[in-house]
Length: 223
Image (cartoon, rainbow, N blue to C red):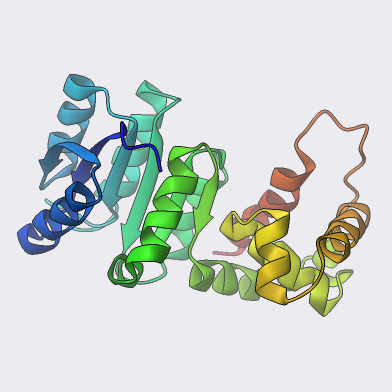
């Protein structure tokens, strides 16, 4: 991980906020500011111009979607800002609101992942590098809501497994390791996914991102 990363944290629970800051600083990362509400984190982002913002979904005053709205606003102000959103449990409408706007440099994790330090740091690294990190439980629930999409029904069980791991932000080698198959097998499955989801190589889009967004958008419509 790039040790020059500048990070801001928004979390209304002081214990979790300071604990997260201590964890990241112990890893040699530069936590330049913390805040307990959405307005505070937006001010910190404007003042410090960080590389990554870590935000809780629910913050004062209403403890509903302030963190999501702050994340969307932060990305509007600074499109190159990597954003990692934390939630106590899966909130599908919030996940799809964030992710259907673009997935580069974006993560959505359950707070329980923070306690699994290696997993959390790996997700943070992927997001900071411009990748995606979506909690496996979020992916699983979005797939459940998306099962009626006829294009998704074309996928085999193994292809759905591969697409789920693509949605988490894993690359081909990491997918192969997780599923205990070869890189070649993963590549073959991904080609088949693109074909079944009507994603042509001639399309002027990132087919990997488009495949993930197809079911995320369907889940958003059904939320």
